[in-house]
Amino acid sequence: MLLKTKIPLRYIFGGIRTELFFVFAYAGIIALEDKYIHLVTISIPLSVPMVLGTVLSLLLAFKSNQAYDRWWEARIVWGAVVNDSRTLVRQILCFAETPYDSEEMQDWQVRLTNRQIAWPYALGMTLRKQMEPEIIRPYLSPEELEFVATHENIPNALLQLHAQDLRHALQQGWINRYQQMELDGTLTKLTDSMGRCERIKNTVFPVTYSLYTHFCLFFFVMLLPFALLEVFGILEVFIVLAISTAFFLIERMAIHLQDPFENKPTDTPVTAIAQTIERNLKQMIGDHQAVRQVKVPDSHFFML
Image (tube, rainbow, N blue to C red; front, top):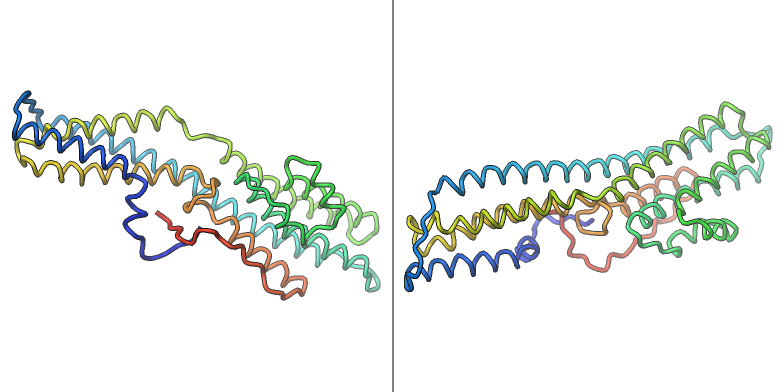
């Protein structure tokens, strides 16, 4: 997700251009028929579309709130992923100790840290269904890559490798039983975050609710010209178009926000968050190399 302060009109109205073309053509035909043909004279009191517009406003407000709640919950979950990743590496570095400097233990700490760097990248790609093993390959050993390749859920497989390494550390005496339980609790929090993301991803926003709202919106648009025609004449075309644009934009905004893991401009910025985690964890283990920047093919992404 890339944010820009100046959003071009082509992006704002591009998603509803079909609906706006329909409204303009429909209202224009009604205005021309009333002015030149006079085959049918239909007049509707303005109070009728006003009542329908009020009901439609409530429906759109509810849909927008629910969609934003899904988007905001996804952002909260990924905030927790950042915190728990930092906590896990801090515990690994501070809990593990030996009477002498153990190169094996230091390799274990670096291995766990690199694997945790790979975990948010893997989770984000899994949620977007765009798994690219090359992105996580630099952080995993060949044995680990071979292990995760046999699993459908790669983030879950990485957490399993974490648990196995914690058991190995306990057996080597680098951590005690209490410290293992604390570390396992952090892994449980990461698992909970992964499950919450999967719930948001797999729970489809009710299709019938969206369909009925869309139907009511078009019904409102079809009634509106007849209520405004007597008052504004041919100018009702532009007034109907302006009113319809507001409703269509609100509906489109809710559609964009309701699925935060679909690789859209309004997605939760999982790649940017994963890069932040990578930067923080590398610095914790003394690796100050620059974080790789994932290239975005289309730079014209905006938050609508």
